Image (cartoon, rainbow, N blue to C red):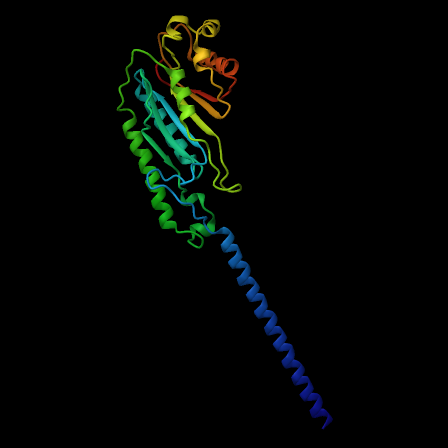
Amino acid sequence: MAKKRRSSYRGKKSGIFLQVISILVAGAILLSLLGFGIYLYLNIEKDVGLSQTDLCPESGARATYAILLDTTDELSIVTKEEIVAEILSIKNSLPRYYRLSVYTLNEGGLNPNPIASVCNPGSINQMNAMARQGLTANPAMIESKYREFEGKIDTAIQSIFKQEFEASQSPLLSSLQELSSKLPAPNSIDDQQFSRGKNHIIFVSDLLEHTETFSIYNSGINFEAFKNSRATEKFGKSYSDTEISIRAVRRSGQNFTTIELAEFWARIFKQEFNSDILSLRILSGEL
């Protein structure tokens, strides 16, 4: 009888042990599912309302990259190709919820209506692996919105060189000043993943300012002549809140080089406008 009791005890003990193991396994599975659910919740695409007209967040873009094209003189085919490449490069590297705008200027100054002004809603390549797999986002909707963004930029590229590239004057400084004031202030979507940036103007020009206030054709690259004109008074805006990059179009027939001209303007921005040129590159243009 004693042996039977021991056998029964061992059986009960084994049963309790299996129950404990089952509970522990079930608990581990539950915790894993809970952890996975929390991970999905934390990584799910944030619901950011976008404007139907420009694909920008309804609360505003994180910042604007604005291309300002000087159309006061004709451009060579090679220069046009470089400008197209510049626009495409910016489009392909534009952060999510940033705006890309394309403006032109003529003898009347800045054209206030951009050829294109649209935000990058985000491409599938800018999403994490789970979003690309459709676990935390809708890949088809993401791709559709991004194709719309690309289409608007491609349309702008096709129409940008249909402008009249001829003018009696070149109000470069006033156009740049007006555009920098016109760009909307950067907006933060959130403080971590989508914080606000800084507006950036890419100025594509031969830098040959020609107005009644100051003219390169009359004064050359004479810094004192610029200081003694009313240019600083009229256009002496600080661009500390806006980054400026210059793509200088090379022109022939001047008694100074494009490099010298670019350095002249860099000095003016530094000393008269208290601003730095973020980057400067000379396009092929004329030889």
